[in-house]
Length: 201
Image: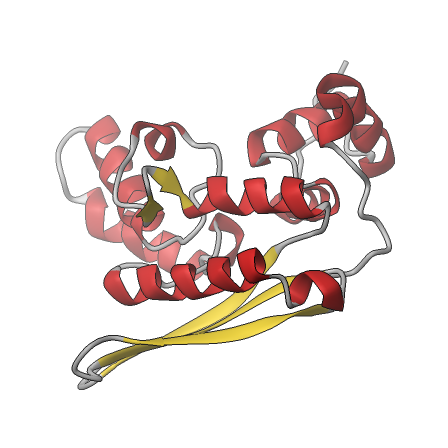
């Protein structure tokens, strides 16, 4: 059987509908030959009650929070979305948004929310910069590390689990905390966008 190439946007869409991990979504889509509805059923069978189809429940509610570091030299605005106004006003949800904003302020390398948000031009630029170095595996590893450090959500990649430069709260990545909040609230928690401001940058 031919393996269907799964676009990153489909993996992201399935994740937003189910709250499942990126690698789990990719595996389910691969098994379902790219059929999102079938992939949801596969995830339900494998992960049981943890998976629910948020489907038409678009993340149109949410909160915008800010953080300004002491000295007023660095500040962050962040939008975190969910499905209902009830959850948008929940203390845990608002606290999550504020803490993520604080971690973004403390992590200047973070520029994008997820892997899918990193522009293709930047990926290509990183490849060109590292092409002159020695050792193909070392170059690729260095490139991936630089791109990973530019992302807020590390996903399920090995380096994120091992603990690299991703922002963390009590040893957990933003990705893990977001997944836990999705499971707790039963809603589609989406870090939509953020902007980091620093004097002179």
